[in-house]
Image 1 (cartoon, rainbow, N blue to C red):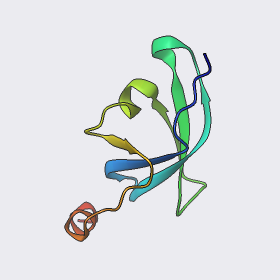
Image 2: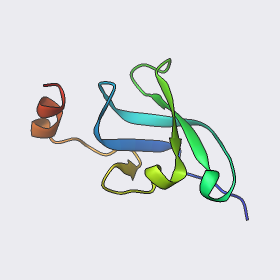
Image 3: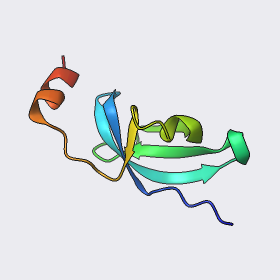
Image 4: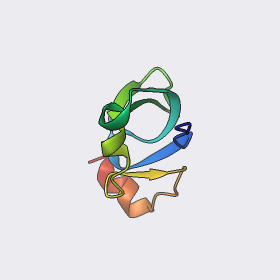
Length: 77
C-alpha cells in the first residue's frame, strides 16, 4: 500500500505568519512518517511536520480551507 498524503494543508493557527501550505516531499515509515511543507505565499519557508501532528484535526486540515476574517486578524496580533 502506497502512502499518499494530501498535497494541500491549512494550519488552524498561524505558523510563521502563514496558514496555507503545499506538500513538497514525504518520508519515513510507520510512526516516523513526516512531510515537508512550504508556505504558499513564501515557498522558501519550509518546515518538516510529523505525520502524527498533521493528522491532528485541531492543528491541521487537509486542503486549503477558507479562513474566517476574525481568525485571520487575530493570528496577526
